Length: 83
Image 1: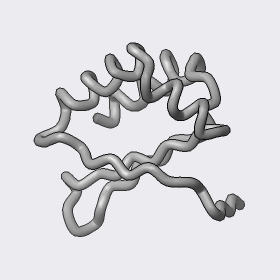
Image 2: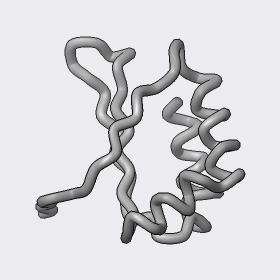
Image 3: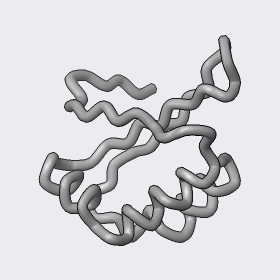
C-alpha cells in the first residue's frame, strides 16, 4: 500500500482538482489497520473527485491491496494545526 500511495502522490495527485492533503495513519494496536484521511478545498471539489472515473480507478487499485472493503466516513475539517 505504501508504494502505491507514493506512486499516486507523484503521478496522479497533482492532477486532482481541489486536493489539499492526505494523511495515512497505521494503528499501533494492529499494523494492518490503516486510516487514510484526505482533504479537499471544498465539498464540491471532493464530490467531483469522488464521482470521477479516475477516482474509481484509483479506488480499484487501493481495493486490490486490502483484505476487505474500506469504511467511508465523510465530514468536514473543523480545526487543523500545523507546526
